[in-house]
Image 1: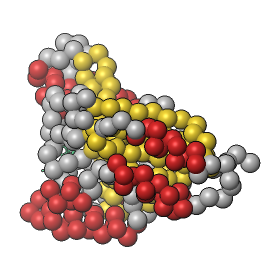
Image 2: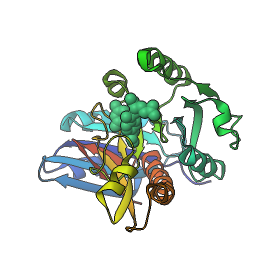
Image 3: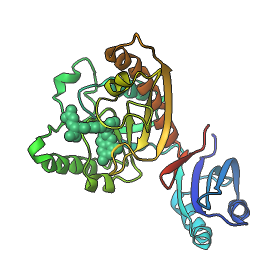
Length: 287
Ligand SMILES: Nc1nc2c(c(=O)[nH]1)N[C@@H](CN(C=O)c1ccc(C(=O)N[C@@H](CCC(=O)O)C(=O)O)cc1)CN2
């Protein structure tokens, strides 16, 4: 039986000796490093690392590994995570009227391409909106938004997030602006797929904005959600060509495929701890 793999991610102020200290610690505890990627940001002076390793002794608990690494982390004042690679994340999906990204994530999850536990779906449109989708095994929460009282609906959203134990929230074309408070509470663990190649065409109806501008490329961007609308650290992007003959409806159709693949790629990266936040940007350790 293959030995359990663990993923260690870390970031700290860059200085000599970090890689040596980490690798020496892992060797001293009898672990074998399988993957190691690193990046030193010369502009910010921040250092980032992702390692995959397996302890040579069986049945080592993540808590014990974390207790051991704490000494190294404190020495370099690191921000770090250490988890069992096979441990599935608890993920909450959120959607509004357009469900092509939701449908795609459900399919990829069902075939095992996205190793996660979907703990719920929150929608601000009723269940029949998605009648063509079968997700009855997943708790569905219809939480409509009253424009005059968005706070009440957000309190319901937060209650579902807490009660479900969601670790990651994915806005799969959820078209409501999260309050500063909720965006703050979800910092670093809420992903949005925006239907434009950011920083172009932030906000609502980006394909109509793009059509009016006469663009020759449209795109999609997955980013962490922050209080600043569509300004969060970008994780993944992609594009497709369009022309003068394409209507906004053409762009919406062409854009659906871009949005789906960008969000799926992003989720795979995040689920495998390959994305670290570097200020208002990200470091992505590609597979
Ligand atoms: N705090 C944040 N909330 C959200 C972000 C974000 O980056 N920070 N991303 C958006 C997604 N988004 C485009 O990708 C987006 C969603 C909604 C709107 C908008 O103007 N919504 C209107 C209501 C629209 C409707 O009811 O159909 C509104 O909220 O008043 C713009 C951009 C998700 N949330």
